[in-house]
Length: 342
Ligand code: ADP
Ligand code: MG
Image (cartoon, rainbow, N blue to C red; front, top):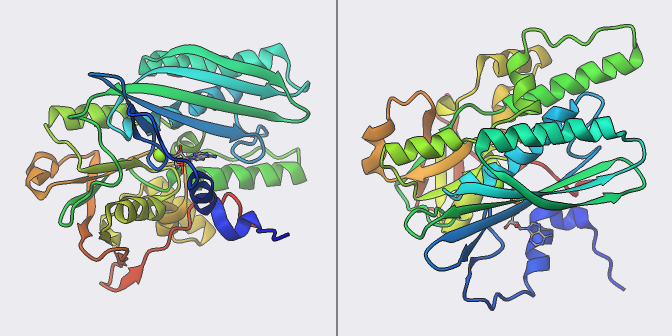
């Protein structure tokens, strides 16, 4: 019997393989697998639906992750996918697998984080499931949001000439993760030391307590801009640009000197002797929005401090180029998170 290793396929190859045999039959299924959320038409309103799975030891490390932050982040990363469809999140469900190492007080902390996020984003917790597991913990959240046919924005609808825009700054969450892991290793080796996070509050916060960019969705609406395509940045800028481009049958050109990177991210990268650009392109978990706009919309956001125009969509299908500071074109590769790498 042939045995194919998952590392050969990778996460996206596996999803592609699994979904091939399924054909949607419901007329209400407007968009199934392949975007930030599924889009369902229930007459008048469109419903978007998305789910995420967080596993202890893979997605979070409780040696440095406060439980309240874990609960908060579990919600915001899901809502980020709802906003990426230009939808408004309304309800979530929370499923929890916990081993006997957790006390009630610990679970209360996780749920306090979930509650604070529900308050902050105006969503209701409407259900879930609870089970014991042998080891560790698992947290899975499903989010449901609302939009309409005029507002919904997909990944596959970018046009050549559209401008590539990104909110906020990139790479900080991955820098924060590297800092936390470094300090954790030092602490394990010498428990008398005190982890040093001073001066790096921003990158730590970006890793432990990310926000979903509800504000950007509202701002775009106020500016009367409807993106032509959109995705949230969970796996790194390269991977997400390639998703938008590939799904739209286009290419993209992006300019190194336009990529927004915070000073703190740069100084931590310098400390480690790493190029901060690597964090922005291939680090994960920024949860910023990457979107494309028509060139005619450019004047509406050209001086906006929250948005950077980093490049444009090209007709060159599947050609993704990064133009470096000195003008050299380099091919982009989707490194991102390798879920099934060895
Ligand atoms: P995101 O990073 O935006 O959460 P993913 O890369 O996780 O998106 O997923 C891409 C698409 O594949 C989504 O439409 C998601 O619902 C779908 N998907 C992921 N895993 C599975 C699975 N095991 N079975 C079916 N669909 C899946
Ligand atoms: Mg997403």
